[in-house]
Length: 284
Image (tube, rainbow, N blue to C red; front, side):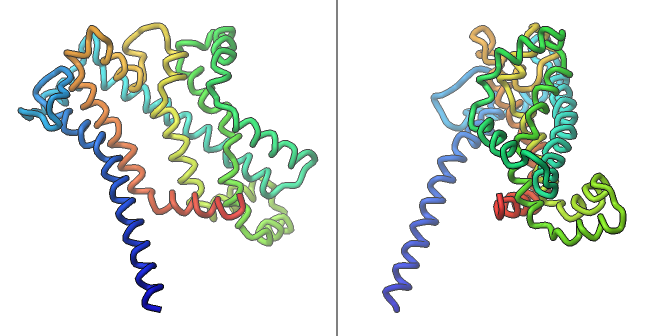
């Protein structure tokens, strides 16, 4: 018995040590980015981990736009795109999840299988087709086109939400139908109020996609107009060969500021986020 307890204790200690080591490895780049953002030196300095002299001047520069760095405008552009995408994508995901979980209709299972198969292919494979389709309808270099791209296939990511909806008692839906409720009313007034964790999870996930994306934003907003950039494109532009020695520390400061809103949102909603993932994994 003592040997079993000793083995179990050793296993737990090893697991914790491994998690601690991985956490340190994961945190090193973040700590370096944060420290570098407070450096008084403008260019890239890889000779020391911590800055020789500390300063917050580059944070102040971010909010003093010039011809290259227009961080406040980039931040607002990204925020607007993320908000619209978040609303549209969340509605798509939850409605598709409700339809596949609660309703029974012809070709339901084949359609679900097709959605899973499509999710196996990287979205980047469709980039050229997406670009020329948007160009045909004159939607390149527009936020509408970008929002459409982010939202269009959102419904394919319905599986976790469906798994959560599967745990909602069907008796409630049947009782609502007997009382004369339509499917729309059941969805809005019965299912969603009981599914707050998965709604929060879907909202955060939908917001993160445009907030962190670079590839599609760079492809669609390709006119080279600085004030129309998203944060990802604008910060990347600071790393250009001719600009990196002037704007690298400012780039690091921008990276820190971009992470703050989503970090606060995640910390506030962490409980519901975790419940949404675990609840959706029960019957995915």
